[in-house]
Amino acid sequence: MKTPAPAAVPSSQSVPVGIWIRVSTDQQAQGESPAHHLERARHYAASRGWEVREVYDLAGVSGKAVLDHPEAKRMLRDIERGHIKSLIFSKLARLARNTRELLEVAEKFKTKGANLVSLQETLDTSTPAGMLFFTIISAMAEWERAEIGDRIRASILVRAKLGKPLSGKTPYGYVWKDKKLIQHPAEAPVRKLMYELFLKHKRLGTVARLINEMGYRTRTGCEWKDVSIGRLITDWTAKGIYRINVYKGGDGWRHEIKDESEWGMAPCEPLVSETAWNDANQLLEQRRSSPTKRPGPKPVHLFAGLVQCECGKKMYVGPNTPKYVCTACRNKIPMCDLEEVFVDEIRDLFSNKTRLHHQIAQAQQNLRDKEQLLAAHRQEIDKVRDEMAKTHRLYLDGHIALADFGSYHQPLSDRLTQLQNELPKLEAELDYHRIRTVSADAVQVEADTLYKNWPQLPAENKRRIIEGIVERIEIKKNRAEIEITFSSSAPSEDMTTNQQNLRELRN
Image 1 (cartoon, rainbow, N blue to C red):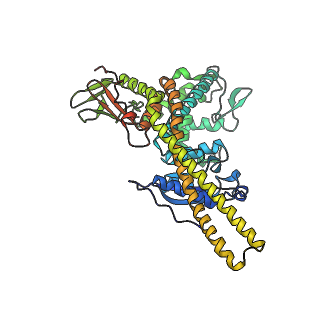
Image 2: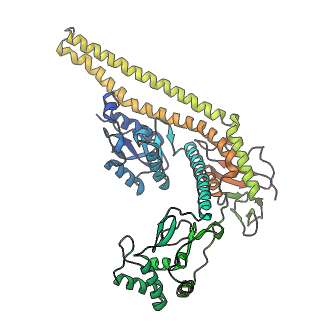
Image 3: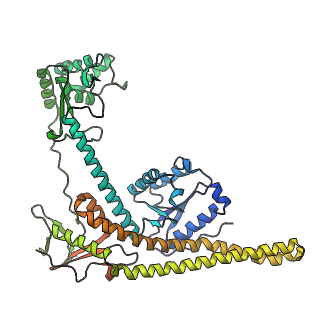
């Protein structure tokens, strides 16, 4: 019998969440019922003041096909449309069968600003400590992937310089043979015809229409479009030069050209004369509207939007100064100095044990109290079950009459129901305290890694970390105060950086 939903902790903003239940048949046989897991998750949600909107029941479903199950697809749709903002489950293995699938799910949650809560692994990305932990991990992982990508691109550049073929489609009109590009007997004449028709009609759309009316199709069997015709006309292979490693990844319609120093070139059989190629491309440029200059990447100011002057005004980086400046009182601080203060504070905050000792010690004591209470509660359940078993044995042995059996057994049964209904609540409370405690320890380790690798991180990754942990930065005449949102309660004096160790800053 299901128990009433636990009373929610008052919250200024209730977060809509879902509960993920997947318990195998073997686990159910061992007493891990779906109802038990559901009640445990409900009580954890109540302890956070969250609203349980959906329950995704996959009881008995094999782990080999979790993400293909209709309930899993429904959950992902609810995340996509913002119907739920967090997903609570018993442990990571119940959500996905391997790390790759788990990372895929986590990435989908991340893009929608949703959180994952694993009770057994004590992970809760909705807590400040958990969010900081995952922010650092995500940024470091992205940096490592970028480093691997740089090495791969370096090997591509070497192959390009040597004129060796890279992965990708062979240009239309050509085919690879003996590591050389030669003309494709069926495609080369069609591509030559494109130049003739364009020089005659001067319109890409007309060329595409005429080529299609002649019955020619692309390699995939589709009709030609003016865009694809234009790309082939500008391709250098037609004049006998095969360029390698020219374009950066585009969006399917536009391609950004790399620096010419990264190109590789190899000769191939020309389809048209260089004069015809130049005439067609010059005409193409004339037919196109004047292209607007593509803006360069927007400069990344690490603390933009977070820096505030002591007078209450926001501080911004001007176009001709490497400083955050207050337009009202002209208070200023160099960007490099503010970054240095931030890094020093991160190191001091998480490496100085005394600054976190009180909070972690208190959390650990609360955790021990909850563990003891839960252990006692489970012992009481076992005790009542033993008494019920003894009562039943006395009845079977004839020591208790049938008419009297109910008066002995029913009170024990009622008490067992009460104890079992209370058990998920106590487990959820323990989960809550364990998550807070373990997250604090994990952040210390990851923060040390962050400090060591900070100089090598790209600006975008630094910015993401700063956004995840900095609540406010106030610049005074001779110091900076940086408030870190690590504390799981209201920011205390210990958790802010308005300490005496903040050094004076240059104006």
